[in-house]
Image (tube, rainbow, N blue to C red; front, side, top):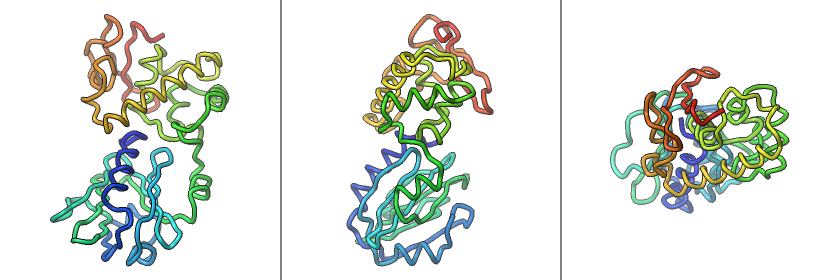
Length: 257
């Protein structure tokens, strides 16, 4: 599932290929991914331009020259691309730009969502999103996580507390901080949570710098070791897998406590 670093990469890619270019054609695919009608999308997008691109958590928010925002969530398997010839299979939104290229939203499993919003603030409030993981302060992070009545992994993945962290990066943060995923969030000391905040920022910045290509992450990272029995990159232990909160969870029982 695309998480904050992947969506940040899409945001930067969109900014480089699509901003300021007039949209001459709008094509939609499955109605399942649309939270507004296809006609509403065309009304806001056709003959207008994408004027800005930013991200909040796992959502991409693209400014439209009519003053509204085009929002995208990528579900389990979605991504953004620029098609110079035929659009890929499973394309559910295609915006034709000058010279015939298309900015395409591709989502094979159709768990993603596309909508129109009046403003970023209104959208964040409507979706019940917490502060973005790259913007939240140490103090606010510690307060929100410590107030969660559940596991630390559940707290990190709760988009209403902190927006942007999912299964892979919550595992990575806990792996690097030496904490088991089922540890009770409310029992962690403020000092520990503030240290986790620093680790979260460092890990996300590393992922963004490497364009979310996990094979390019440092060798000690869990991202390239998400297979049961792999050697731990931090200690002499072996990576284990279990299901936690319905998600496949990878950890090292040797150094995570």
